[in-house]
Length: 308
Image 1: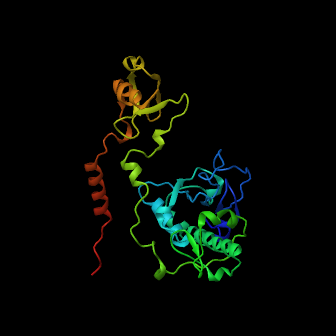
Image 2: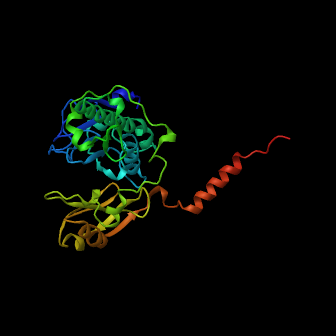
Image 3: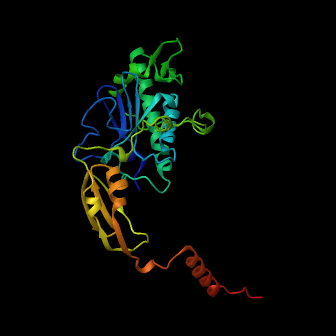
């Protein structure tokens, strides 16, 4: 994970379906896009600001209830100077652009590893939008500011939205350095930001891995033994094999696999109908009570009173 922020963060800006795209540009030897459909809602980087006003953030860590999607939106919103509700999160696919060196979620590093990169992404985008407005109005960028709602404004009350400036900003070089907000300037970091992943989950609109459907796809479940390291002694599949939708039943190292057209046929029908006997294996006598007893005995043997 020893990769510099400079290499991790921003190497260039580009246009994908129109607009400003900022991203982490780890070289991609295969030059693969993040999507087969190159459009504004499928950016090839962390951030895309589209001419239609959409602000898209690719979330490259898995949202498992720990709030990483909300955290990333908050970090970006803080430095981009927009409300978090203006940002649309998208779960990033597996791709070399998001591997440093591996694309994984764990070790409680999701926020720590993106704390600066995402803030700097927002700050760089904001600075480029200010520069684009300055170029159009022929003024010094230092005389301009953003209003906290996705607009660039000047002292004479001229205003331009991020959407209007996105294409022009995409043609500008990415700043090498940016100034980030200090904690006393934070508007969103440290506040209670509504979680964008909650409404679709509550309303049953969220998609999970188990929802994936492909042409001809089968579903496999495992009838597992009652003990760890137990093995199949014998099994009877005569009843289960003839059930509708069942494709195959076969023993594996961890139990009996049932392959069927869907989860219901595999788990609730076929797997439940299998008659099985198990060799309980080396852990057959292990229980919570026996573990406590053994640990207690080991502790007593290793205990020695403190010298007087």
